[in-house]
Length: 209
Image 1 (cartoon, rainbow, N blue to C red):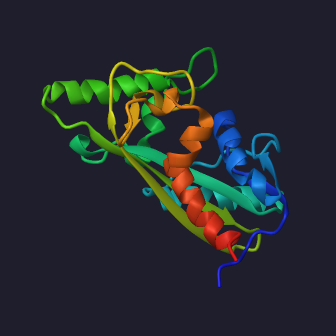
Image 2 (image 1 turned 60 degrees about the vertical axis):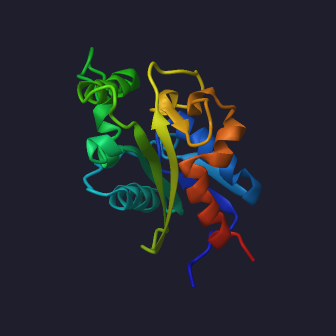
């Protein structure tokens, strides 16, 4: 039987404020006090895995071991069919920019432009099918863990549209819709996103009867 989370503190293994807000909203009904790894001053571990599962576990285990609390991490990314599934597990890496005035950072417009440039170079008829995937890992300080995976199918659009969401949301149009993730109200996105799919699986196992 899979171990279950109790009420109390849960470390969200992220330094991304947007991701913390989205995950916190999804877990709010279950009596968990979510705090980010960033707020605890925990370092970000190197994501050396070659799969979403490996990277999610690296982050969750590092946060659990450093804090002494159960920790939840996600690793998510965009996979574009015409690009052989890229950027995939390297989704965030495509947004890495050069050091500027001593500070590293991510430029998501640059990353979206890179994807669009590669598709444009392949021709106007190139299919723009893609999907977001999300892998959630819960890790406990004693080493036990659980994995949940979710997915959202869609297509890419250009130019970017919308000011809500983060990452590649402004160019992702979920299947059956005309608006991008970044044009959706957060509550609406939470119902259909890859993260929502993974969380539905987590909730069913962790908090179901």
